[in-house]
Image 1 (cartoon, rainbow, N blue to C red):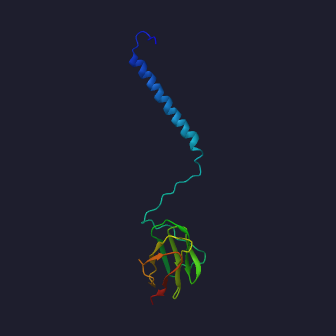
Image 2: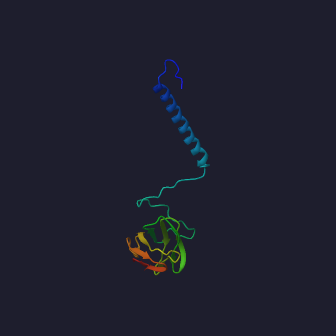
Image 3: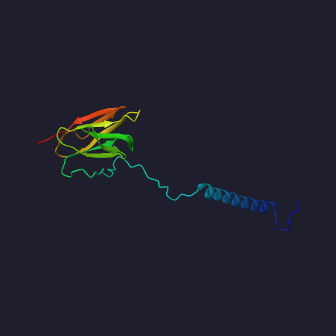
Length: 156
């Protein structure tokens, strides 16, 4: 190769390497743009920590003056097939980590985990002042089936 006058091999090699790096960087950037596709409408939702209380499940039939019990999934963010039953009727679904239900004296609380093969735990996270049973902090392990939680007792 004939070298132009006044330019050394190291300057020519430096110019070639800089141009090659720029071309490669542009190719990588272009590939990411074309392969990335349309990102609109794809929201990233962080998993909330244990301190997050979450929105309470609101139902049209809930009387705000009735005592309530709030349940929390311990290891999962949601289990949409897990159902909370009061007196055999589904009153809550664990679409989120928390489910709050209205209760009365003598209500039977149960969890239906028949759709899940793996065991999961539910904690009684909070109760109204007048609820004596179940107590706050009670943890229930559900293994493939219907699991009784407690018979509701209210303090007088």
